[in-house]
Image 1 (cartoon, rainbow, N blue to C red):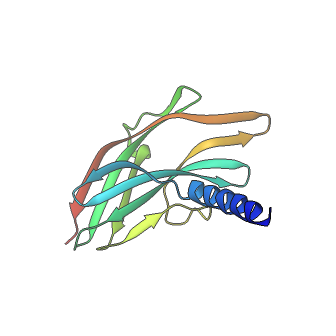
Image 2: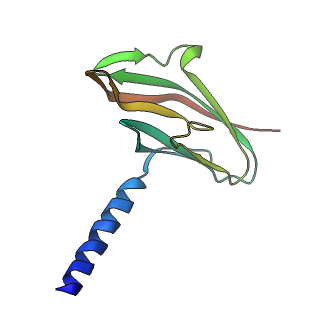
Length: 133
């Protein structure tokens, strides 16, 4: 009985921790990898990104975000307002967390009063990697 409880606890612990770090590949371009994961911050869920530079040199990566909330386009990804840019040193990785510092994220499930806004589609458009000099 004791071994069964320990085994059950171990399985549950493993599944909880593995869900927290579920990164899914979004794009790979010129030695840079972009992955996504949903994290919980308070009562909200955020789609955040982990961006890694595997190059032996520093780079600047940029893109435009297209975002659909509740099947309505909120960001077309066609204006400077939707433009994102990030510099990474050789071997550097940056990933989002609930502190919102040095991270990129999109609201995945945001509660405002009685209303819940749900991310239904996103696209990172025109991803560009430039070698820094």
